[in-house]
Image 1 (cartoon, rainbow, N blue to C red):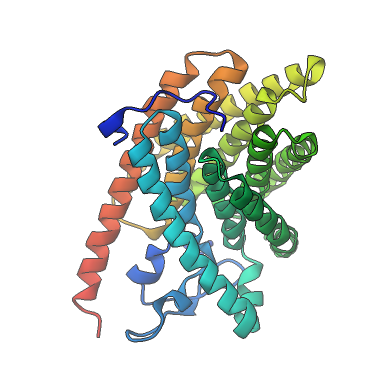
Image 2 (image 1 turned 90 degrees about the vertical axis):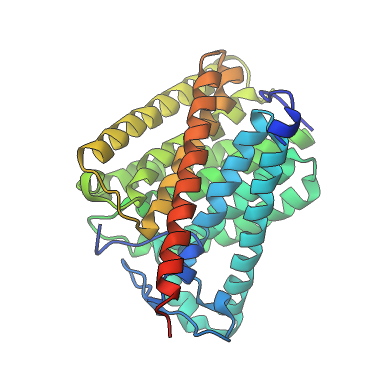
Length: 359
């Protein structure tokens, strides 16, 4: 198992209304109902006594993505116990999501087709690739390959359905077309290094280039007013570039690319990472300018980009030779962990308040 860019273990220390709402599985528990159509979540959640997991919206994959990428970042910084805890949390949520996805596909095709054309549906692909990347770091390459195959099978159909139903002005969830594609690139590049498989490295490069193209297309349709009024998912605009930088850093580290190809990938890594950091600063300033302290389920869409930006810095430091990216990534990682804890605490508080009035 490659441990490039990873710190030594530390023992006990390691020890906008009207737009698509995408958040973690807590959405299903915190809200009694929702609906999924082209731009809005809309569905009835099950009553107590029924299988609650059958009411999860497709956007529930974001809850896997957040702890999943935090697990990767914590592993790279040597906090093994915390990393494994985050991985177990993400895995449990992924299994719930997979069960619900399979149930809809087999027994409720109408609902499945209605939900498949929303950007949030692509969290199923992104969540699977993030989970697979962390599992590969554990050395379980067979399972990681299986997750890559699963994500690759889901990706084209969902991507086409989403793109066909895009609107002129889209929320930050539109950038999930890039996130899902770059997730494939990250996992493929990770496995290429672990298995010494050159074809996987080339496939990862193809996915990386396509992901950049999809980012440009999503950027044209992004409603920039979301920067000031968005309730959380607008952070995906920067997170998509961060996962692009992560993919580029893994390609840069690959021995497959030498000479001018290696130089180009190193440049791509630094450029995409710099742009993602610019988004980070811009969005943070916008949050301070237009303070939004109230809890909103779309805040789960903020946590993953925060964690991804941190992990991209940690991963890029070695291959690019820019050493100061590592301490920057460590600082950003703990900010992301704090954001996850705050969001989860807000969810628990909101759920507790609503449960007292639930019939």
